[in-house]
Amino acid sequence: MLEKKIKAYENDKTSISCFSLIKELPKMKKNNFEWLKEKKLFLAKIGLIEIRGFREFDGELKTVTVSKEANQYYASLLFDDGEEFKKPKHNGKKVGIDVGVALFATLSNGKTFKPLKLDKVIKKMKKAQKSLSSLGTLF
Image (cartoon, rainbow, N blue to C red; front, top):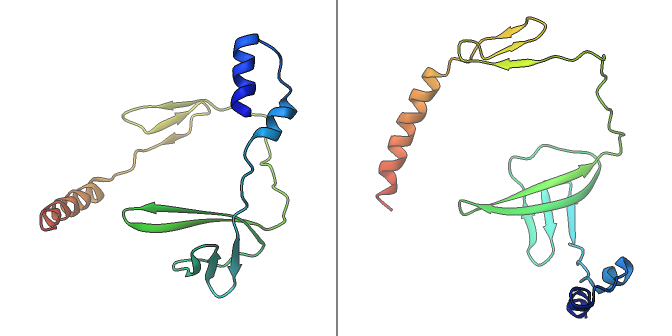
């Protein structure tokens, strides 16, 4: 039915009411999930899942997004704690930022930021990457 209305609009250039289109859109099913205080999550069609590496939150669980990355599953949980979001206070001043090579950043008010020294971290990361790449040939 929705395709017919769209084709009629393309052919005849007749107007379509947005309310009639909304009626034709498929209804999204509400996912059933429940947060249990014992570090467990219940997902419909999957069952009870134990959560690892999780900190406690107060409030109502609003959404759960499950994603798969590198053959591992991750769940992103969104809680509503009921508190009003506080906007940061603005003092009315504007600051310009200049990003450079010798100095990481210089603000228009004269404040400067030195670049981070990451030489040791980069060397460790290169070494770890070499060992991981050699392991990849074994599998």
